[in-house]
Image (tube, rainbow, N blue to C red; front, side, top):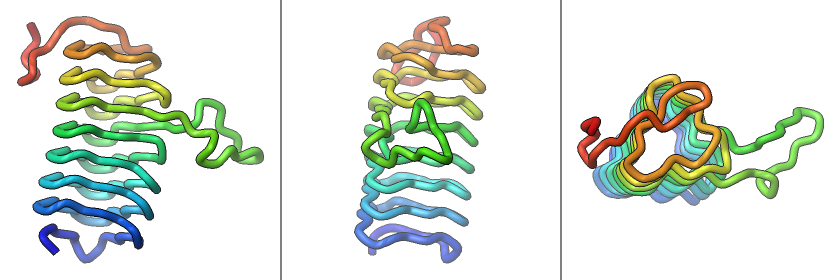
Amino acid sequence: MGYFVHESSYIDEDVVIGEGTKIWHFCHIQKGARIGKNCTLGQNVNVSNQVIVGNGCKIQNNVSLYEGVELEDDVFCGPSCVFTNDLTPRARYPKGASGYKRTLIKEGASIGANATIVCGHTIGRCAMVAAGAVVTKDVPDYALVAGVPAKVVGTVNEMGKVL
């Protein structure tokens, strides 16, 4: 197999999981998901249909990656950060996958605990989203964003040091 899946987790059919990846307690990886090598998925992570997770990603506890989300390599998703995929959801009038907006998290970016990423945006390479921030527009490469709505408050380097 080449990867670890805790016995309490469920992996659907047609899923690819890279070598060295660890999937911990109570996770669900849905049909068509692609997870790269050497990733760590903490407790209670959901990876929805067709989601792509690059190599070396760290997805902390209680994160759901909904259809339309793509993480490039070495992305960090802090505990309980939130992704959306529909700008105008209605229980009575579901749009389905054709109505979902794509969200791209570029290589090396980090998303803090409890941050919300509104769908349809790109978080730039090595950017950092502060804990609790609400991202409502694209985030430039190497930007540090914070607040509600998130605004650029600084710059970070590849290691996450504020410059």
